[in-house]
Image (tube, rainbow, N blue to C red; front, side, top):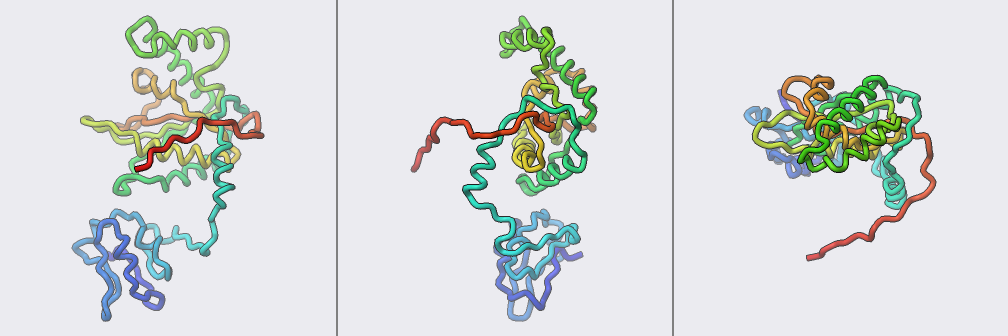
Amino acid sequence: MANIFINQDLCIKCNTCATVCVTRIIEKATVLAFPEVLESNVEKCIKCGHCEAFCAQKALTLNFLPREKVLFAPREGQIASEDLAIYIKKRRSIRHFSSKPVNKELIDGMLDVARYAASGGNGQPVKWLVVYDTDSVKKIAELTIEWMRSIQHTAHPLAAYVSVILSQWDSGLEPICRNAPHLLFAHIPYQEKWYDPSEAVIAMTHVDIAAPSFGVGTCWAGFVQLAVAGYKPLRDFLDLPQGRVVACSMMFGYPVYKVTSIPRRNPVEVIWK
């Protein structure tokens, strides 16, 4: 089956599709022929959609979920740079959450944004585990504390630091998941010889940036992530599919407090060559 459909009434044979094709499998148009993918190259398509996205005439459709194709006007979806700068700068790590559960449709919307995160070769290896149940979030916090107790007074790099966290926990505070109602885990295929969480971090960052537009607050769950890597009982509790490993973790929920200003940060340091 062909990988691209060409509307011959719209195509002007500009060959932009062939030029931007990542795998160089689109044959350029000629006087007598429109752009095409030879049958021998169909399996080489990585379904990145560049050919479709950059077609100025909107004459090309990639044969992959064609009903999901979205067309937009030239300026539709554009955000003024100053508006985008304020939106990103006002993003805060939320540590005070409402107990109100986040609507599952909103969570689906945030994860839908993350579908479009960059990945090598458009492999899209990232999948998600949403811990929606509040009691399960509390159990994960407890297991993380158990892990911290197991490394206390050892040579672990965090051994000296966990005593502060354990003291807070034992006094009735919740310094692990901050009483967030939900947790989000990005997981990727296990690789025996190397481990690179980059694509999961990129996808999770999409969620992190998109969340405030859904009214949701987020905070990267670093303690939980360390515990997942070092404590089998926690991994067993998460019960990921065989061959998958957690790459990054995030707590999320509706924030109690609203952001009203942007704090300062160190000046940007740049080396130009």
